[in-house]
Length: 162
Image (cartoon, rainbow, N blue to C red; front, side):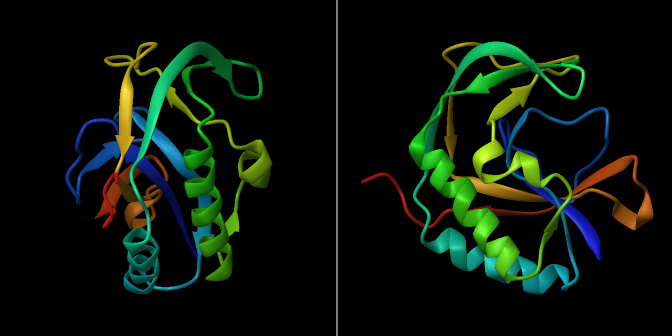
């Protein structure tokens, strides 16, 4: 089993990019941490099929707040856009179908709270618009190093706004 997450990076991040777990680029998590027992290539092929049917989703940054067990993580919440929730639900459903086990099931479906975590060097501001037109698969433990992250592949949505 291998641990992943699926995100939309706010600024482009190249496939193959590695970064420390404390230095995430700005992103919106689309599917929280999960494990899968199938190969990268099989997993990616399934997500590509899903992306072929997905239209881009426009979201807007709203208010600041805090998340985490002790409300210690500063975030900017994203509007509660029904299209974003449908994208999230579709990803989670497909991931479960191919055997994903979610580490924090309370953060998916009904517990999904879209946000952008405030980072040391960057943050989202109220009113910032993000077009979710691709998703990035992130390896949460490349080469067994739990402190590193690696962008495996970014998949663009095939459809565009009508």
